Length: 415
Image 1: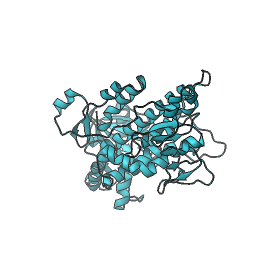
Image 2 (image 1 turned 135 degrees about the horizontal axis):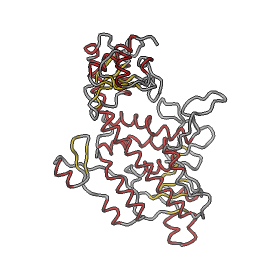
Image 3 (image 1 turned 60 degrees about the vertical axis):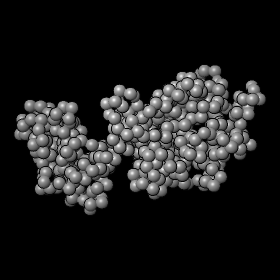
Image 4 (image 1 turned 90 degrees about the vertical axis):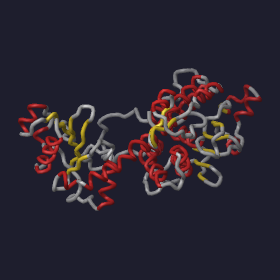
């Protein structure tokens, strides 16, 4: 189990099952061990197997004090005192909740300044005025006053040179994200790795939350065109489904419980994404750099590269090509070869025209689409063929030499 986030799931589970039990929190504070700078473990057997140096990850810090909604205040004057805004509270709106404020609350509770703050959900202006920080409500964006709303007329704030308008999550991340990332990866704020992951986390995780909350389509859609399928499995959709059902009795307490689940869900996925980027994605750059440096040893065209070990290569390929002046159509890489270690077979992959796109720079030879095994070998004249996907974006061969030949033939084929 990799990196620091392995404890988060346990902590969240205990917190939600036994809402604010102190024993729940003690169970989540087991020691974490590092295998290398990229891997951590949580249990004793793993510690004995991998006896490496200890690290101290700044885990998510949801307050153990009670939470509540200001609408329930009338039930108890003492409870009212714990639920109205004070200097140790994070304020957001009540009513239906969305992913942006749930994630924003999680992010704030992972900062030094607000790590011990409770969450207050209300639209009462007086209560919000007493909060240490307010997000997604109040029609005000003022960093000095720690007010982070995005609904007001004229708001057009974006993250650096991105185009998507920020939601409350993006606003909080813009101003506190680098601190949060640096603490979680145990690097200084000035460390280049911190900045690289800070930017990448926005692009790969936060921006989607901003886009969904602001109603920004992921793609430009032609007038009258309908999507080929629905996607209701994204984080924003799953957070939305945590709202109390319309056809069940409503209580503010129930809604608050569900909101805390949303905060935990958004936080868990933030941590998992950062874990992946820090320990899986980022280390993949070096193998890609090495493969590009040796590309002409693989094929004189320079358009086929061989990864010595599979890694997440696409983002790094685009970046290294651009940095090296290899991003023109004449010089760019068209095919990537790597071994599938589980199957002990070789793969030949095409390069998408852009990250996340299903369109490719150049596909495998059209006549091979959907063919397998002997049929494919006979059609191609290349021994050891395993398959070519119908979409022509990936194929396989028993050997490296066979995969390389598949790439070479496809490179020469006319589209």
